[in-house]
Image 1 (cartoon, one colour):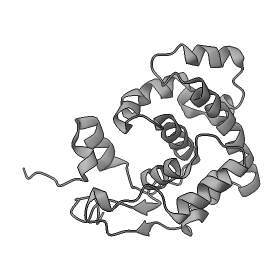
Image 2 (cartoon, rainbow, N blue to C red; image 1 turned 120 degrees about the vertical axis):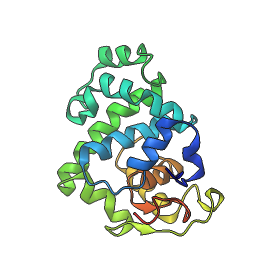
Image 3 (cartoon, rainbow, N blue to C red; image 1 turned 135 degrees about the horizontal axis):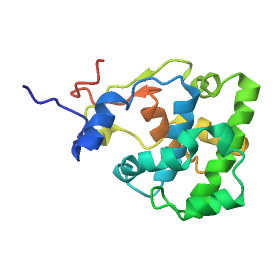
Image 4 (cartoon, rainbow, N blue to C red; image 1 turned 45 degrees about the vertical axis):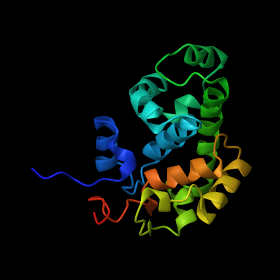
Length: 187
């Protein structure tokens, strides 16, 4: 069996390899998945992505499998319960932003028919295909992530700065930022 060449960030452990090989950079149009990653990318701020991947199942259990309609109704007792849950990042601002973002997500769906219809407009409705030779060639933000961040903030979303937005754009396959030597690049 031959070894696969992957993006350099995905060589740390099997969880990262599996995520890279099967999810990262594959275009997503499912509102539930788009919401899940909006929350996970915000939770990752200041932490490693590996930390978030390791807590992903904990998030799914704690947050009703990312059911944004339920999360939008979380009360103070539920937030206190989440802050005691070692299966997620127990940062009060991040936990509160999950509820705030669920409410804002529902408003976007109401306005645009789906979050998918809204979020993909920032890349013109189809993935941007980049030709990155190394991980060092990948920016931390772009004009698209700047515009997305600005508009999401205007709509009341939290933990949604331009760097978080660019990581989100990458994860949801709105750009192809696999390095050109990565086996996923041409898929």
